[in-house]
Image 1: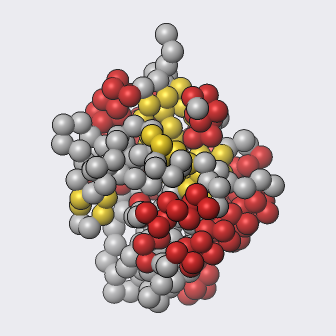
Image 2 (image 1 turned 180 degrees about the vertical axis):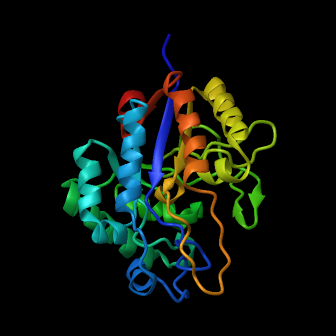
Image 3 (image 1 turned 90 degrees about the vertical axis):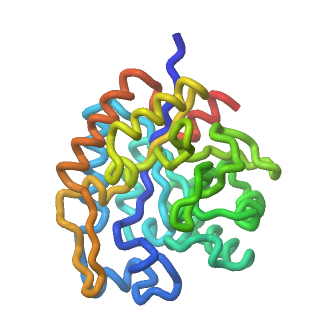
Length: 282
C-alpha cells in the first residue's frame, strides 16, 4: 500500500518578524540587522541545529526550508549546512514583509535578490516560494511566473481570520494556478475550513486539531502539509521588546507537541520536501 505524502517545511524567520516589530517597512526594526544591533538574541543557529536533531530522531531526511534573503545573507553557514544535508532550500522573499505591500516592480526586485542570495550558497536557484504572512495576490503570482518559479505554497484556503488567510475560493489540494505555477495550499480543517497546518495552530489550538485536519486531508487528497518556525522549538525565553507585550508558547511544551505530531505521521506517511513530491507526481 502506497503511503500518503506529508509535506514538511520550516519557515526560517524569527519571532520578531511580525507586523508589530519587524514585519513592515514602517517598523522601527525593518530588517534583521537593525533589531539584532539593539537587542541581540539567540538567532537561528542553535534552533536550526535543534531541528536537525529532531528530524534525525524521527528518521526525517526530507523537508523544505523557506529562507528569507536577509537570513541567507546573515547565516550563510546555516543555509549551507541545510543544503549539505540535502534539505530543499526555497525562497521566503527578501525580508519578512507581506508581498501585497509592494508594487510589482519592487516585488520583482526583492524576490530576485532573495533568489540570488540563496543561489550564492546552494549553487542553484530555488524553485519554490512562500509569502511572508501568507498574504498573496495576482501580482505576486505574475512575478513568480516571470522569475521561473515552479511552485508556491502561500495560499490558505480557509475562512478569513483577523484580515489574514481567507482564500477560500482555492482548492484544498495541490493544483495549477492559471499562470502555470503549481500551488501547494496550507492544510485546513474539515467541515469548517480554518487554518490547521502550522505550528501557530499547534501552539494556540492544540495537537488534536492539527492531527484531525492532517488525517482528514491525507484521507481525502493523499497529501497534507505542516510547517513551523525555528523559534518555536527554542529553549530560550522570548526576547523582551519594551512596550510590546509578547508571549510565545515555545521551548519544551512546544517541542513535546511537535515531536508527538512528527512521531505519529513519520510511521504513517511518506515525509518529503516539495521538490521531491513534484518529481514524483508531476
